[in-house]
Image (cartoon, rainbow, N blue to C red):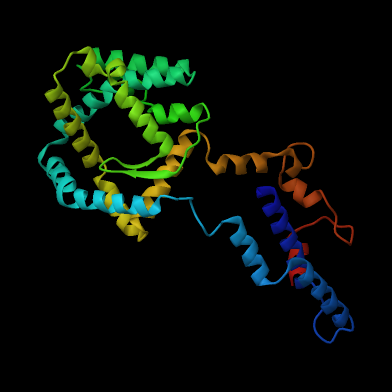
Length: 314
């Protein structure tokens, strides 16, 4: 599809160049040129044909969202709950609790997730990242005083997040339809399955289980962690409002793009591969100014240069 698109664009470019360099009116070859143009129009079709082709390719349909009606209902519920309950509490938390307290709280909860990250990295076959998460956990749990301070991050061991949804995707599980979960927000069928597995296996990867923490404290800690997460996302509210986009579409596309990038499924890598392909170079693997200036000759036997391009287009 992408190669066909590039070839089509190149064809359009040369057609436009030919039209721009055609003789002016009253030239005896005008009739022949018009006939040739009619032939071109027959081959390429009119504007409606082009529009039909683009429509058939699905460019105007956006992301497939078969559950959109249900998703929008849940999205509306989440936005209402956020507007009247969650966001006001998060704003109060951020305004009233100093950074010197909020940051260690966030570090503490994020440190508890490191064993979970490590397990998933090992399941993905990435032993290096798994060992990195384990090292972060032990360094921050000891030198970082139970994870209150991200000492490992300051030493160059930055946090790398993953989850069961990404693990399933790593082994080829299809993404499935986009789903909005009550209170939890954007997800997919694959990621929702990962969340379910995470909950069912919590006793094997949760630090709360290892520390034998009572259920009431687990729920309190989970609520405080969620509040800290929401407070950290307050800055995104204004950005979403400035875009003027449909909040549902904005959240859906942002979430899906981020997840696909984490799995290396984003389309930009494919475009880079196409442009880096040897078919686009001149045989020696390097494009430079000299290739353009000296590689091909014009009709007069001279090298191509800026004047040649200007003359052709004029």
